[in-house]
Length: 185
Length: 161
Image (cartoon, rainbow over all chains, first blue to last red; front, side, top):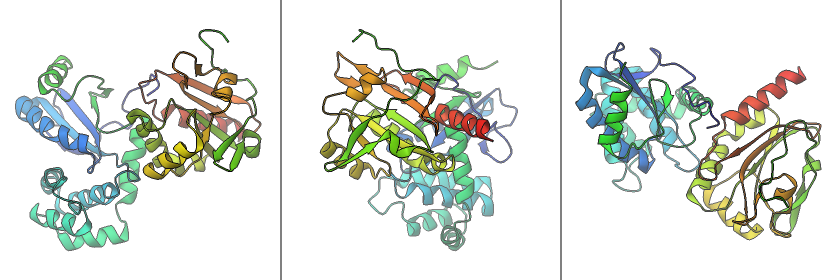
């Protein structure tokens, strides 16, 4: 972050968004599926979604630090596969499942487990395995990542509220919620 | 030395240096003549913020290479410390040891912190002719990300074409 901490690729129909497109606040998260801090953020975002309802749209973009988190890239690709083949509802279930299971054990995010979470989420596990071996969604994930880099994302999770990087305390839901409320037009 | 050193600014020829990159090898800035170089000074191996910054750059390395730029990390840690840190973080770029005399290179670039005995968290983008084209000093606790580096590299490519 060098003083230009604004979201470069604007939120578009290519994004995974939960909540109405005309919501007064859009919260964007750049996250890594194997990052323990992102896992901590996950229930906090859920609670914000519950609290704000239709007044907030939540967008998730991939920012896998794959050298540090060896399963992060495949997890992101698997979630993209589910989104592309089975739609957004299945994507969000997959997204939740990955974070819910992240700390189960060492293998929690290996390909077989990802395929199982996909199937449980209403996706197609076999398709996920095929997409992973063919690397069909690597480019999509990489594009998210580079968009994040250009927006000044320097680690995960990084949040943007209405396109402005959030420098506040996301770990405390009350603080995070108050800052989102303050961004309402 | 002044109390608050000033980092070398854009337009300044980058001072050459030779530093250990492993226990028995050295690297000189002049080895990279004809290529752009990113110098990333950081305060210390192992501190969580540094890990973050170096891990991020590790991920972006292919993008830096697209711009024909080499990334060099520099801190006052010794070569063995760097080796352990690089192995633990699976870093794919060299870490230079500005260890003896301590911080000498950081001083020439104006990014040594006398009081702490570490370097600033400072970035320099040097063009293929060895001239500094962009520099930035981040607050020590703040990972500066890579957007500034990429913009600087793009303006180099723009100038070259």
